[in-house]
Length: 271
Image (cartoon, rainbow, N blue to C red; front, side):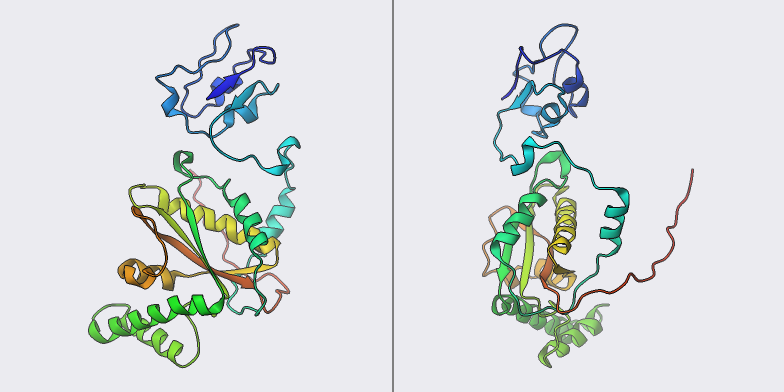
């Protein structure tokens, strides 16, 4: 339950105003409250708690606070954020160095704050550690691609799949880029926003990885086959009612970037 401390509350009404579902009642000098029949609508977003200027609101729902909660939020300068964002590059050549579990736990501990539809926080994670485990998936994907190329030549992707499968058989890897790790998002199949939520979460993941010197690569060539043929991932534990979201390869980059490339100008329509 969310509670309101009468000794700290100044009856400013901010908690009621910032509540996204408008279930906090506060008028005049009354203490804020949430009626029992409306409490099930609470999204557990914490806005009432973090916007309260006197610390009068406490959330009693499940969850874990970050270590730095006692500190005031620190916001980066726009130039710092810009430099970080435009420096992001997709990594396709990885080193042999493994990514430590503690580092990944730190990164995903931050990713849990990525926005999600109605703050449902639906994304769960499966991480493959080591190139042998990654190769199990890559090999299955290559075999699927070869079958499609042979049996369904009218498929608009058949030619591409055939080339990718042959490249893998010849020792190249356009599918997972020989990444030492793969992270797979899994989401509830009945949540209409969850696929988008997994994209948002992985976008946070890749930007945080960059701060740790970890390279990332979106793996569309894993996601498409695995969604068409679930047996590709049948050796992994995907809970009943869940489906594959988006996937990403990651690991320490073999090379460092030295500059920023060109991009098109933004295409903006002002109304």
